[in-house]
View 1 (tube, rainbow, N blue to C red):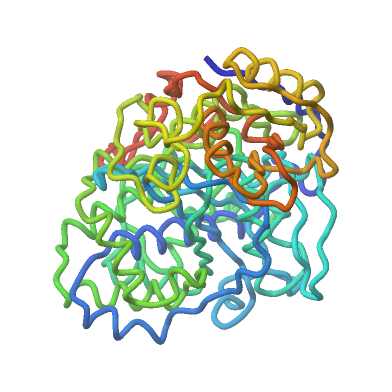
View 2 (spheres, rainbow, N blue to C red):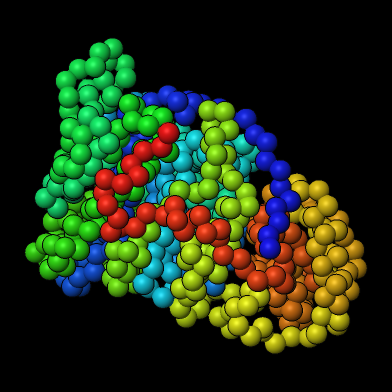
Amino acid sequence: MTRSHTARAAAGSGDGAGRGSRRGGVRTAAAVTLSALVLLVAGSGWLYLQLNGDISTFGADGLSRDRPAAGAGGSNVLVIGSDSRAGGNRRLGGGEDGVGRSDTAFLLHVYGDERHALAVSVPRDTLVDIPPCRLPDGTWTPARPGAMFNSAFTVGNTPKGNPACTQNTVEQLTGLRVDHTVVVDFAGFASLTTAVGGVPVCLPRDVYEGDLDPHLGTRGRRVFARGPQTVAGRRALDYVRLRHGLGDGSDIGRIKRQQAFVGALIKKVKAQGMSPGKLLPLARAATAALTVDPGLGSADRLLAFALSMKNIDLHNTKFLTVPWRYQGARVAVVHPDADQLWAALRADRTVDGQDAGGPARPGAAGDGKHPAAPGAGPAPAGPAPAGVAVAVYNGTTVPGLAAHAAGELRAASFTVTRTGTAADQQHTATVIGFGPGGQDRARTVARYFPGAVLRQTAVPGVTVTLGRTYADGPVPGAATPAPPGRLGGAARSADDDPCADLSYG
């Protein structure tokens, strides 16, 4: 059972979904392809030592100070594509105004059992709430409700973009803590596809020059024939940026083809084997195009993450687009389907409802140091609810949320001393505050708010400041639901037919 208290009615801005962008597909496919390769490759230590010099990092000072807690298990990696004009991107059609841009991105969840992975794509035109983000001068922007998702990366108008802002936006959208963020440009994309010997792809019909460039004014010559073929280099770039003339010409259909492309690439890399002679040229091409957060900023850290994925087979490598619908020329997230998907990932459950959890990771609910989500295992020691008094504050703009939570707490035998509205109504995660000596009582309260953050304060007593994860998530005390069955059916596997389900509309 789930509930959503939030009514989202937002108008977007910027280019419509029906307008073409020759760069968007390149960014997305580069992000998906390069990151999937680096994160799936596992080899000898000497190989990664050679790659250290190619890895760039971005600062983490722009990350939100109000972040979701770790989930029950697994890891989340946000992959963002950038069209910076730096280096070789200029000759391949990088951004035209010097501002780093990103059209689509995906969140990769590697399950705790290290045998399943799911990449959830977020379309560029998705209407989301962008939280406050840090500008280059150190100031923070106001929150922006109802903005297009891809605009988060442009906050600050810098050539390298704003990956921290996009990460903050994804954490607010999903309620999931992003463990790592990877930014890729597409300059290394052509080299990568050449190094692997080309990637098998498929097209639902013939494609002409006018489909690649709608401003050409003529159909032009045929550049791709209908059916299966192998692409590499610039030809691979042309394939993944295709949008017009296929299906409804939208980014949704392009995402389908890009997911098929990544699945085919992973399949080919695994088929070629993991010998150093095969991996070195591929890894060099990939890492040269990466900018990562400090937590992944060395070869040994990339190796550690890669090792967590080496046993994931092709069938259990899944791709999914966030549940969506058209809202005019934009894309709206569909609730409660999306809420159930995020809840399942927090609980480390697959899209078909299976428990794919492994050992709880440090900082996760149920690791012995943090409160466990209902059904996740034994609750931490603490007093009975009847012995705990708590004040409840609404840290969101959803009306009546504090009263709702207070009623649930009273039903569980807590004493609610007061309800009210928090001074800051932009909280993503629910925060359990506790004064001196109140940690055990706070942990008892946190058992009823999966994903809540515990924070010590100078104020006596226990307070609950409700965040968006509570507004959009499962009812406290209820079992975490699995996503609807149709989500599992909509997911693509890396071993699927590369000619199947390639467009939309």
